[in-house]
Length: 136
Image (cartoon, rainbow, N blue to C red; front, side, top):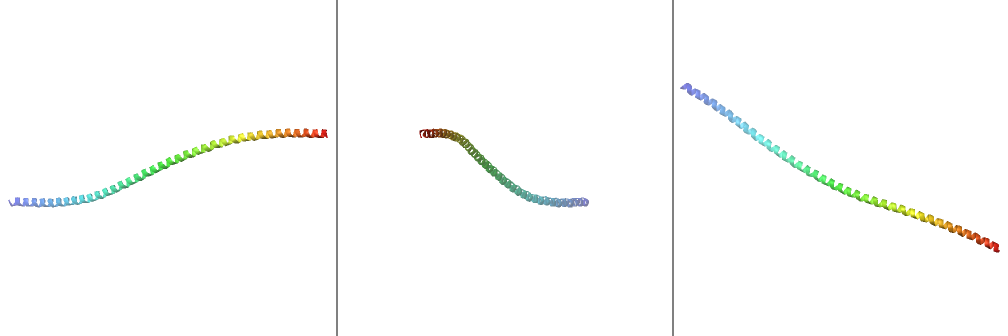
């Protein structure tokens, strides 16, 4: 019976040691779990911050894209306006060239008329001189 009691006491001592080891392991796992919770929380904060930064960057990108599109539309409108002005100026230039050609023709016709009148006047003047000299 004593041997049996000693066996039970030894088994009890081994059991108590196993409980102590298990308690220490549980405490270590619990401490590791708390540390991991802290790491997880820190990582969640970092991820949240990165998401906010990403959202901000996306908003900035979208705003810049919208501004670029607005400026491109303004530029296209300005180019179209300038193209219309160039076309107007070219039409006016063509019209002025045609008017100059018409004026040149009119001037040439006036010169021809003037020459004809001068020639006729000169001829009449010579005839008049010739008559005066014959009458004199």
